[in-house]
Length: 336
Image (cartoon, rainbow, N blue to C red):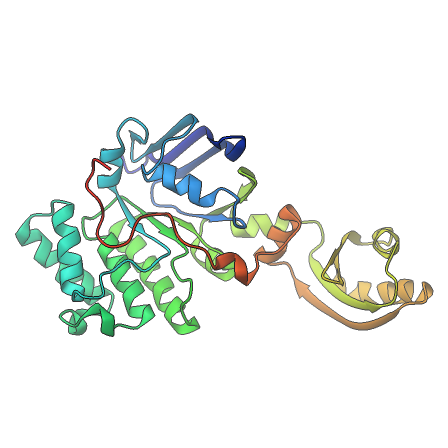
């Protein structure tokens, strides 16, 4: 495949489950070598999109091509061209790290001589070579995730799909995984497609991000451009005592204020030059007989972008879901 060609092309993709539109005319293109991220709450359509792109389910309408292959007509070729790291830990606890990689290599038809060299190389690069012959049951969560990344790359795929790759990991392990993904992307010339609930992860790893909700892509751009698109360079979070009815509309009429939202009792004010806007806001609130308990100022983040387009934030409980990306254990045969 031409290195300059697009790794993923999606046109008018629809997936219906009865009356439910899990995907509603989705269009996107991912060039070769890009790291593309998908953000969205549970039920947004992220997992459905990836299941279609990895050949696990067929779309109701539209077309999707991965590594040059139509996912509906040639799912086998798609699966041979991609690697998958699911949200759920699927390495076999009763096997060693080496044996887990070996089984996957055999399923993908990697020749014996090439497979052994590739296994050693990958285990070394993920820092598990010294633990290669230990049972995976003795690995920490971070070690298992590193092993699963190595396993997904055993057959040198062109595109790596990751579903919540660092969910449940401690901050140090998350950073180790981030570093690994950046290294593999550079050294393996990988295209990466990931879903995540972690805004810092998306900001750090992704060249572009699509925010998906209710089966539609609401916005798609680089993290920096997404942040620039939201009116107001700063966000002030204000906790006010008393009845707030009519207050958001009143504050929105002030100079430099672009938008006011109320989330869990806290006013979120999007404004230019937030520090200078604080005394003006304080005065306007006090004129209505209300008391400001606290006020904080911050610059826009991807979390703010997400809230702006979806009207809500991604909660910790949103990440507590089962991955239907792939089943547990080794991959099923291509005839699945």
